[in-house]
Length: 254
Ligand SMILES: Nc1ncnc2c1ncn2[C@@H]1O[C@H](COP(=O)(O)OP(=O)(O)OP(=O)(O)O)[C@@H](O)[C@H]1O
Ligand SMILES: [Mg+2]
Image (spheres, rainbow, N blue to C red):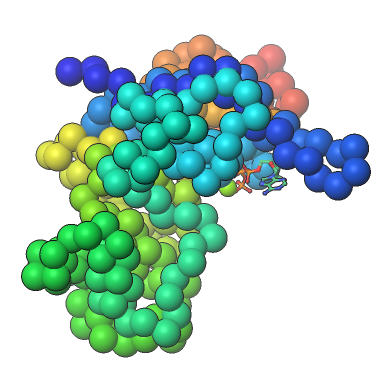
């Protein structure tokens, strides 16, 4: 129990944006995640959520500090990590010319999963996200939400120990979003998979997340169970926490 699968220590990422312009996208972030947890990363646009995920999966190197995934340093053993985690990117590279099934199978092939097993996993995933009837259609004709569902399915085909999902339900309709949420909940509760997701939907957070981390301008300004954070900020819900943190409207004084 309580095995730590992600740990960051003073994790900092600075981007150079043209001459003498820097953005501190992550500013000394310390966060621990235990196996089986569902953790939501929240915060306004540009807060650093995607950057944190990209560092944890080795797509960006930290400027300072450390990040460990499954006990391995992301700057030293990224191959070990990548075999065991998966990512649904915010701006995902879906293969437009491939069908829904081919997208899943092709992606799974990169993990070296045998063909027969791969097709069975694709069957299951296509059933779950409700795209079985469309499995042989080219993805380029899909709606935004349908593409998102293909990508959610694709990100799970390797049966990763940790799955990072960057806005998995953005653009997905109500029922589809529910399907995705239920799938993620099941993965966590029944298979003890660790799930890190970002979202702007606070109802989704309330329903899904064991804990949240709120980022603002690269700082992790709060981390904990939603109920504990609400208590800490003397707020009735997470939306009030956000209003207090990000608008300066001072709802707490009213
Ligand atoms: N490749 C990059 N080059 C330069 N700056 C970047 C790069 N990626 C991100 N940034 C900057 O880092 C900051 C954090 O960006 P990030 O994408 O992590 O935000 P986010 O919290 O995911 O926002 P959103 O909710 O809009 O997805 C922003 O100021 C952004 O402009
Ligand atoms: Mg983002």
